[in-house]
Image (cartoon, rainbow, N blue to C red; front, top):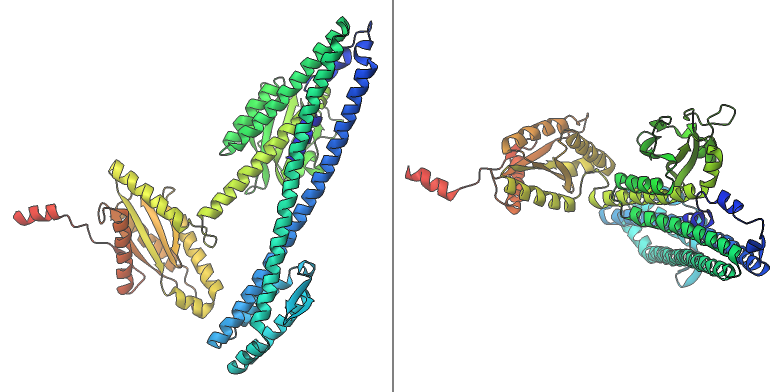
Length: 577
């Protein structure tokens, strides 16, 4: 946002440079050189530039402090979590008498990857102040001694050592101190963010106030004569145009904040660019993670000009390599990008946020003076690119947050909360449109035994692979969710009980194919459907759960459908016949 503000305030109005140079009248140069007005404006401009430079430097320092604080907070959080997991491994070992060495070593290994300079400087242990590193070393030494005794079969000695050395109190003190430091860092980060926001707002307000003051100076000077009136009119026109461009850019930023997806953002950019730069054409490329290339996302005013490339490699563009705008010339004697098409001047502006490449904003023209024209609008083009960069970053962040809120992190399937909403919507739609909706409840057989015998890492792998089998065999309209633990659930709109059973059988075969030597993988399936077996969401879930239970009772690794729904009126009619 700070870069966008600086670009908006520093960039001159598009197309005004040449007109302003030619506007003073030769007969009355005093119209624009009156000492009082000129010196005041120069002083004000110097003040504005100084404030902008100081504000940019201050915001940059605050952003650097914010990044540093977040990195430090993340390191401490990871180290704290690793210590908590190591402590849990030691406590579990003292409870069940089994040394959880692998779990403990994994936690300690993760802890050791974090920089020690982020640890708390002083920690109170046993009533004495000691350094953070020394406190952690003491706790780790005690843990190692306890696990050694447990491995030797001396469980009682391990517990005695745990109590006599006050290991739990020391561990709690270390973890608490790290949490306090995280809270202090978060408070410092919040303060830095507040400083950044306040500075940006203050600079914008100051620039607007300075603009109004400049207009007032021009109005005052214009009363001195007819020639001065002409200069005043020109100044007002330029200021109005500048204000309109700034307001239009702020409107664009506001509209981009309401964009729901890439298509919405493209529409806003296209409309703004065609309004502010009607004589120029342009394209927008967006980075595709899956293809590791820039992909053409939007274009406007291309007309008979050269067709843009559909994709651009990151190593094919000088703007991306340099991290700054680059102009491609239509002639072969200038440095040009590999993807550049002959016949046009093209200003390419890289788009990035948080250190990641987001896209490439291109403005092109086939005019003979295209190089000069692109220089005139370079500031405006940068402002457009900055606004679009912020929008793309927000869209990407929003998509990540939505995915994290709705999906299970292990399997990638939707979580239970999303499943409940999706099932409710599917049932309501089925009842309204008079079609079927089925659910398949899945439970991996003997999953706890698999975890106990082969470890939780192997269990997680099996669960992920089973989820992958399910996803690859479903329709786009089906919704696969992790219901809880090793239980999965699939919502199948517009699918009868029989069709759901056939699909479940294919899923059962696919999951069974995950078996390996020494590891048997299978699943039990319970099928229910509306209206075949149930009449409501609650009944549907209960029927599927009962069918799943029956599948397990019958020996597991099978598909069982819920019994048909009992219709009292129909049964009475059949009995009467």
